[in-house]
Image 1: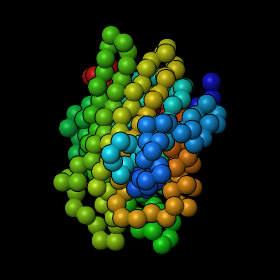
Image 2 (image 1 turned 90 degrees about the vertical axis):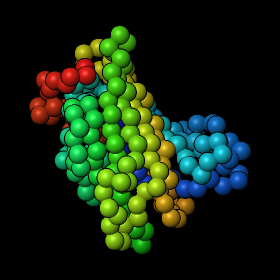
Image 3 (image 1 turned 45 degrees about the horizontal axis):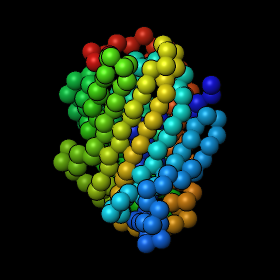
Image 4 (image 1 turned 90 degrees about the horizontal axis):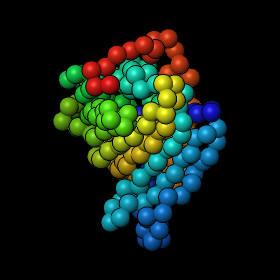
Length: 220
Protein backbone atom coordinates (compact mmCIF):
# COMPACT_ATOMS: atom_id res chain seq x y z
CA UNK A 1 0.00 0.00 0.00
CA UNK A 2 1.24 3.53 -0.62
CA UNK A 3 2.27 5.44 2.47
CA UNK A 4 3.52 8.35 2.73
CA UNK A 5 6.62 10.17 10.26
CA UNK A 6 7.60 12.49 14.63
CA UNK A 7 9.00 12.06 14.16
CA UNK A 8 7.94 12.27 16.07
CA UNK A 9 8.91 15.99 14.44
CA UNK A 10 8.18 14.10 14.47
CA UNK A 11 9.11 13.87 12.68
CA UNK A 12 7.53 16.53 13.42
CA UNK A 13 7.67 18.13 13.70
CA UNK A 14 5.08 19.94 12.08
CA UNK A 15 6.38 21.18 15.39
CA UNK A 16 4.70 24.54 15.23
CA UNK A 17 1.26 24.33 13.76
CA UNK A 18 -0.99 24.56 16.75
CA UNK A 19 -2.97 27.47 18.22
CA UNK A 20 -4.46 28.03 21.61
CA UNK A 21 -7.97 26.63 22.01
CA UNK A 22 -10.91 28.94 21.53
CA UNK A 23 -14.15 28.59 23.49
CA UNK A 24 -16.04 27.21 20.51
CA UNK A 25 -13.32 24.65 19.76
CA UNK A 26 -13.23 23.41 23.36
CA UNK A 27 -16.82 22.21 23.08
CA UNK A 28 -15.65 19.50 20.67
CA UNK A 29 -12.18 18.88 22.08
CA UNK A 30 -12.59 15.08 22.33
CA UNK A 31 -13.55 14.51 18.70
CA UNK A 32 -10.84 13.77 16.16
CA UNK A 33 -11.27 15.87 13.02
CA UNK A 34 -9.96 14.42 9.76
CA UNK A 35 -7.67 17.07 8.23
CA UNK A 36 -6.21 15.16 5.29
CA UNK A 37 -6.62 11.71 3.70
CA UNK A 38 -4.28 11.03 0.80
CA UNK A 39 -2.09 8.15 -0.42
CA UNK A 40 -2.92 6.03 2.61
CA UNK A 41 -1.94 8.76 5.10
CA UNK A 42 -4.63 10.15 7.39
CA UNK A 43 -4.04 13.26 9.51
CA UNK A 44 -6.41 14.13 12.38
CA UNK A 45 -6.51 16.88 15.01
CA UNK A 46 -8.41 17.58 18.22
CA UNK A 47 -8.33 19.90 21.22
CA UNK A 48 -7.30 18.46 24.57
CA UNK A 49 -9.50 18.66 27.64
CA UNK A 50 -8.81 21.66 29.90
CA UNK A 51 -5.73 22.58 27.91
CA UNK A 52 -4.54 25.17 25.43
CA UNK A 53 -2.77 22.40 23.54
CA UNK A 54 -3.98 20.72 20.39
CA UNK A 55 -3.19 17.12 19.49
CA UNK A 56 -2.44 15.73 16.04
CA UNK A 57 -2.58 12.09 14.95
CA UNK A 58 -1.17 10.47 11.82
CA UNK A 59 -2.06 6.92 10.79
CA UNK A 60 -0.66 4.96 7.87
CA UNK A 61 1.02 1.79 6.73
CA UNK A 62 4.72 2.12 6.11
CA UNK A 63 6.68 -0.04 3.69
CA UNK A 64 9.56 -0.81 6.03
CA UNK A 65 10.67 -3.07 8.88
CA UNK A 66 11.10 -2.08 12.52
CA UNK A 67 14.88 -1.82 12.22
CA UNK A 68 14.52 0.54 9.24
CA UNK A 69 12.21 2.82 11.19
CA UNK A 70 14.47 2.78 14.25
CA UNK A 71 17.45 3.58 12.03
CA UNK A 72 15.65 6.51 10.42
CA UNK A 73 14.40 7.98 13.70
CA UNK A 74 17.92 7.71 15.15
CA UNK A 75 19.52 9.43 12.15
CA UNK A 76 19.06 13.07 13.10
CA UNK A 77 21.37 14.42 10.39
CA UNK A 78 18.86 13.50 7.67
CA UNK A 79 15.75 15.02 9.30
CA UNK A 80 16.04 18.09 7.07
CA UNK A 81 15.37 15.84 4.07
CA UNK A 82 12.15 14.42 5.49
CA UNK A 83 10.59 16.45 8.28
CA UNK A 84 8.55 19.42 7.09
CA UNK A 85 10.21 22.84 7.49
CA UNK A 86 13.10 21.62 9.65
CA UNK A 87 15.79 24.30 9.30
CA UNK A 88 18.34 22.58 11.56
CA UNK A 89 18.56 19.29 13.43
CA UNK A 90 21.49 17.72 15.25
CA UNK A 91 22.23 15.22 17.99
CA UNK A 92 22.72 16.72 21.45
CA UNK A 93 23.47 13.54 23.42
CA UNK A 94 23.22 9.83 22.69
CA UNK A 95 22.68 7.78 25.86
CA UNK A 96 22.35 4.41 24.09
CA UNK A 97 20.84 2.98 20.93
CA UNK A 98 17.43 3.26 22.61
CA UNK A 99 17.72 6.78 24.06
CA UNK A 100 19.01 10.13 22.80
CA UNK A 101 18.42 13.90 22.83
CA UNK A 102 18.32 16.04 19.71
CA UNK A 103 17.87 19.70 18.81
CA UNK A 104 15.41 20.83 16.14
CA UNK A 105 14.64 24.26 14.69
CA UNK A 106 11.52 24.74 12.58
CA UNK A 107 11.45 27.39 9.86
CA UNK A 108 8.39 29.65 9.91
CA UNK A 109 7.19 32.09 7.27
CA UNK A 110 7.95 35.79 7.70
CA UNK A 111 7.18 37.63 9.95
CA UNK A 112 6.72 34.69 12.36
CA UNK A 113 9.85 33.75 14.32
CA UNK A 114 11.36 30.29 13.97
CA UNK A 115 10.74 27.84 16.83
CA UNK A 116 13.13 25.38 18.43
CA UNK A 117 13.35 22.72 21.11
CA UNK A 118 15.35 19.75 22.37
CA UNK A 119 13.50 16.41 22.32
CA UNK A 120 14.27 13.41 24.51
CA UNK A 121 13.57 10.20 22.55
CA UNK A 122 13.16 6.74 24.09
CA UNK A 123 12.44 3.43 22.34
CA UNK A 124 10.32 0.76 24.06
CA UNK A 125 9.81 -2.64 22.40
CA UNK A 126 7.17 -5.23 23.27
CA UNK A 127 8.69 -8.34 21.72
CA UNK A 128 5.63 -10.50 22.48
CA UNK A 129 3.34 -8.35 20.33
CA UNK A 130 6.06 -6.96 18.03
CA UNK A 131 4.98 -3.43 18.92
CA UNK A 132 7.48 -0.57 19.09
CA UNK A 133 6.70 2.61 21.01
CA UNK A 134 8.84 5.72 20.68
CA UNK A 135 8.30 8.40 23.33
CA UNK A 136 9.27 12.03 22.77
CA UNK A 137 9.30 14.78 25.42
CA UNK A 138 10.86 18.22 25.42
CA UNK A 139 14.07 18.73 27.39
CA UNK A 140 14.82 22.49 27.39
CA UNK A 141 17.61 22.12 29.92
CA UNK A 142 19.78 20.35 27.31
CA UNK A 143 20.45 23.46 25.19
CA UNK A 144 20.38 27.22 25.85
CA UNK A 145 17.81 29.38 24.03
CA UNK A 146 18.91 31.21 20.88
CA UNK A 147 18.38 34.89 20.19
CA UNK A 148 15.54 35.54 17.77
CA UNK A 149 14.11 32.01 18.03
CA UNK A 150 11.08 31.14 20.18
CA UNK A 151 11.66 28.14 22.44
CA UNK A 152 8.74 25.69 22.40
CA UNK A 153 7.50 25.37 26.01
CA UNK A 154 5.74 22.01 25.63
CA UNK A 155 6.10 18.97 23.37
CA UNK A 156 5.17 15.33 23.72
CA UNK A 157 4.82 12.64 21.09
CA UNK A 158 4.24 8.92 20.80
CA UNK A 159 4.85 6.47 17.97
CA UNK A 160 2.93 3.20 18.27
CA UNK A 161 4.23 0.91 15.55
CA UNK A 162 2.83 -2.58 14.96
CA UNK A 163 4.80 -4.99 12.80
CA UNK A 164 2.43 -6.49 10.20
CA UNK A 165 5.15 -8.56 8.58
CA UNK A 166 8.85 -8.14 7.90
CA UNK A 167 8.23 -5.45 5.29
CA UNK A 168 5.16 -3.52 6.51
CA UNK A 169 4.34 -1.50 9.60
CA UNK A 170 1.10 -0.04 10.94
CA UNK A 171 1.98 3.41 12.31
CA UNK A 172 0.00 5.57 14.72
CA UNK A 173 1.84 8.78 15.53
CA UNK A 174 0.42 11.43 17.89
CA UNK A 175 1.88 14.66 19.19
CA UNK A 176 0.79 17.67 21.23
CA UNK A 177 2.67 20.97 21.24
CA UNK A 178 2.45 24.48 22.60
CA UNK A 179 4.44 26.49 20.03
CA UNK A 180 4.82 29.50 22.31
CA UNK A 181 3.78 33.04 21.44
CA UNK A 182 1.04 33.68 18.91
CA UNK A 183 0.60 32.15 15.47
CA UNK A 184 -1.70 33.61 12.78
CA UNK A 185 -4.77 31.44 12.21
CA UNK A 186 -4.10 31.34 8.44
CA UNK A 187 -0.69 29.83 9.11
CA UNK A 188 -2.14 27.26 11.50
CA UNK A 189 -4.78 26.21 8.95
CA UNK A 190 -2.20 25.95 6.19
CA UNK A 191 0.22 23.78 8.18
CA UNK A 192 -1.92 21.53 10.33
CA UNK A 193 -2.58 19.04 7.53
CA UNK A 194 0.28 19.78 5.16
CA UNK A 195 3.12 19.44 7.68
CA UNK A 196 2.45 15.93 9.05
CA UNK A 197 1.37 14.59 5.66
CA UNK A 198 4.42 15.91 3.84
CA UNK A 199 6.76 14.59 6.54
CA UNK A 200 5.45 11.05 6.23
CA UNK A 201 5.46 11.21 2.43
CA UNK A 202 9.08 12.34 2.49
CA UNK A 203 10.03 9.76 5.08
CA UNK A 204 8.81 6.89 2.90
CA UNK A 205 11.27 7.95 0.21
CA UNK A 206 14.21 8.44 2.57
CA UNK A 207 13.69 5.29 4.65
CA UNK A 208 13.98 3.03 1.60
CA UNK A 209 17.65 3.96 1.11
CA UNK A 210 20.26 1.18 1.52
CA UNK A 211 21.75 3.05 4.48
CA UNK A 212 18.74 2.08 6.62
CA UNK A 213 18.65 -1.57 5.57
CA UNK A 214 19.85 -4.47 7.75
CA UNK A 215 20.51 -2.35 10.84
CA UNK A 216 20.53 -3.93 14.30
CA UNK A 217 19.35 -2.52 17.64
CA UNK A 218 19.61 -4.03 21.12
CA UNK A 219 15.92 -3.44 21.90
CA UNK A 220 14.46 -5.13 18.80
